Length: 374
Image (tube, rainbow, N blue to C red; front, side, top):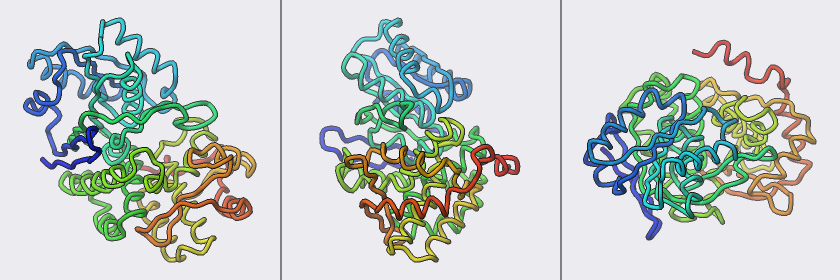
């Protein structure tokens, strides 16, 4: 096993990473100190792992309350959050309950926000089962739900007690989901570590084939990058914003197409290509670096051409981005691969980039790629 610390003073915690550790009794004995454990999962993940984890916790003498919700990005809403609260109340869960988020990024965000708000806050543990959640969304304390007008617009910073990453859970992950997770891996490399990008380029085929040892190495490096940035800027008042590279465009794609049409990682991949072109347009990124990033994402079978939402719709959606100031979006840009910064960009330059990159008819967005995906 490997351990990576997220250094946040009294809110510090460890990320534990390994293979076959989901039901490690000694880990759960130390972390699950409460008598009642509510495991929040979804209908895709629960059949694989809920009973395994519940059995170990019961053997440790804990009362287990399973809470299983529908799967998918469209479920990250007030109704599902209310259903989780209702299940906790119906089971008599009090403030001495530990919530376990067992699933991908949607479950992590939902369960974390439920923990932040249930009886004014109860502890929770992240057990991410998708690559995207393992390398990104389970770390850093961002929790929340979507709103019809914008992605992740309602939520809270609420740090977990611990994160347990079992790479073996990726064995049941569909190829499309694994590729979507690689978008966040590539994002970390693009904003913070060019040498990491080179490593990913060299072993990409093995990673997409599910090579466990290589996945552990890559997940560990992404966790280190995320932990370092979060420790320096927990509430995203400065440097942490670089982790949103591709997200201003990507969140607009998700909201514009309808949540769940594209996976989050797919939208981020396309958004990173647009962000790279924007960086090139303002003069900070070499054309060769734009081409290199786009080629790597394309090798993952991720979308690199954006849907044509209409320029005004694009601008409307991006104006609601959380990095925006007074309705004017600020963008994560690259000086070079591994070197990111954040600044506003003139609207006319953004329009030029949108005209150049957002050309796929909405009705056909991603369809052809999915028809030939493995």
